[in-house]
Length: 624
Image (cartoon, rainbow, N blue to C red; front, side):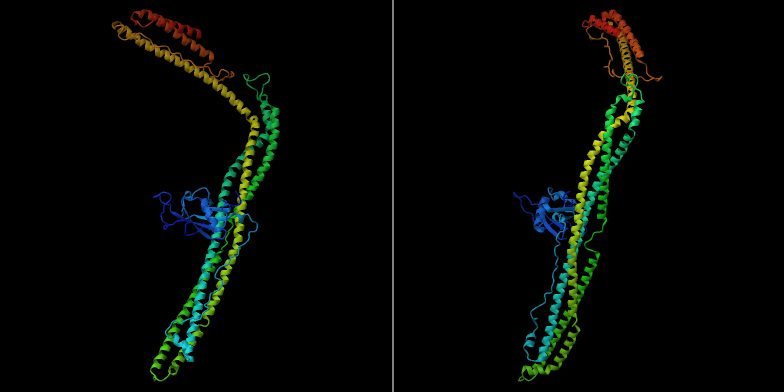
């Protein structure tokens, strides 16, 4: 085939009916549009999946045109495999002709341009996000005491605000780290899934290669068996040709077949021409055997290469990556847990700050009305100081949480980039394997072309050796010919005997009928009016059984067995005797006709009847 090649696990069919697509109108009023089909096409080169919306009557060529827009692969360079079993989609057929959708079949797309390149460029793979988007603005608090804490000149109250702000800042940073980690996990999982899809794309190409290999074996195996049988037969002819010639000279012809220039079977063949054929056949066989050996070697080499390629475990996504993704998810869960801890601490801090502020405000309200607010806050310095100590202890306890989250995220970034690098390296592995599959399928095409040429060569050689085969089989054919001549002559004698028997049987049948008619006339004819039933005096006609002569040119070769049927002289004697009996019978009838002339109908002509009888007697006597 051309440069290219003619699924794997998954939960979705490559083609899924869109239940939400409305029924529209096409052309005339009242004509319903066909339901839309969502066709899932997997790009085996990069592992990406594309969704193409078509209707059931659309052709595969339309699908290819849509894929040009999504993949930038020209339609002429697209190879679409559908299966399992995987085979190429015919661009001229419609989508519905493939009985789609099908829950367990997939469509893989391959780029013929890449398969024809010796060193295809490896695209750079970058997964995102690469950085953590940290909050840049100072956190704003919406609590009722926030404005009071921001505007106060009391250091202790300002400290409460600072503590709350720091806890909130760390929470916002933790949420940003968690969001980035989850996005990196999703990107890594998608990349590993694409690696699995690329592996399945290679397996689909290998499946198509195996199908071509099986078809090649189905054509080569019977051809090779036919060649080996013909080779053995031809070698026997070449090796024993002189023996066959000598045997022909030792077999004399039957005297009925012999002549002055033809005494043995050897005289029946053009020996010089047969020897020329012998030389030509020897050269032809030597040349063809060398080509056949080369073909067999090519078949073994190609089959071994295909078997090796098919049996090799090709995976661009090792199972370790799945374990890595599981570890990735566990680290993201740990980051989420640490973020939950910071959230709980922040909620506790916000409550502690609100309670402390409220308590201070209540105590300040109980002081003298003349006292300033700042002086009033001094009365709550004790519990504010105690709250600050508690918040400081809590802040020291969570001091390592955010750095641990950042360290875990840095490790996740490293893993994500490692998977991206593996994806980039996998492109080269995919191209190498698919190019190898493409080369093997091209080799299959070349092999089958060579096979077709050698089939024609073997057929021509068989026609050449057919001339020598005549020399080998002439004795058997001669014996069969003699037997056939004897059989045919025996058949002719039996056939003639059967005709004679039939003639005698018909004569006897006619005699019996005449006797019955005469008895009727003797008993009742004289009492009947002549014109009552015309034709009562007629007699049944004669039946002459004869045959067209055949096998008159056969040589006079007869069987010498004792139980043979009568020879020709005996047959003629029997026939003469039968004719003599017929003549006697006719003579008797002629005499009776004179006696019964009084009973004849007026329309009956005795003279014509007598004339017919005389003619028959003359014919019978002439045959005798």
